[in-house]
Image 1: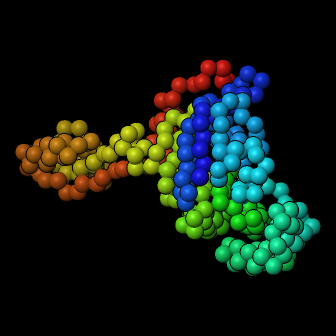
Image 2 (image 1 turned 180 degrees about the horizontal axis):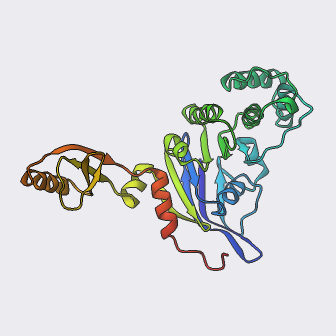
Image 3 (image 1 turned 90 degrees about the vertical axis):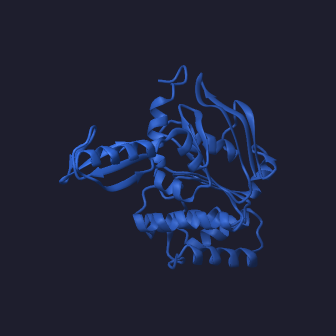
Length: 295
């Protein structure tokens, strides 16, 4: 469980995060999205206890985010996560398990189980000789060595090939299914839309939209109907030998059908276009006012 109340962070008069409020129940994947500089990473670092807020509060797994005890219940994966390259994956993970006082026999079973789930076979290979995708899997496994209740992942699939990216995205979803609470940030909004239960859209340090993707779509997006006719009607555009008229209601669809019939033609096809999270995000970001004092 995560609770955020009026969270704010300033750096020398610059407001990086302003008045964030949200909660994440157990077993949910909560997405935080926004353009570069929106305040996403600062928000995640405050939740992880790595950055002290200027005002407001955040609690993670029942602990204040600044409480060292909280970190026993947290797994954090930053966007950039350098590893000890001279170690093997197993020795590296055993080292971190020791830091969390995980008994060796428990740690060994947990490490190999996690690496099995991540499909990492070359676990005795030196980390410095691994691919970027393999090292990212090791970093994810590191976030799980203490069996945390809450996971905070900042761009977990950043810079990876599509196959590895899809694997990690699905693995993230599986963590929530197993009972973990996941706060997840990513630039690829398709992935966010596919695995997140709810989303917060940030821009200029503020949360400008929040809720399920469907709720955000209903509030900020609009459904369009592409009506294809065999004859030209008012407002239509010729496209591949037929005519397309774009409308926003079923009444307008029926009107198009009547116009086509009067012109001696008919409606040949109707396609529904529902805006993606990316479409909505771009529209929200363009409409959101800048925070005073931002460049």
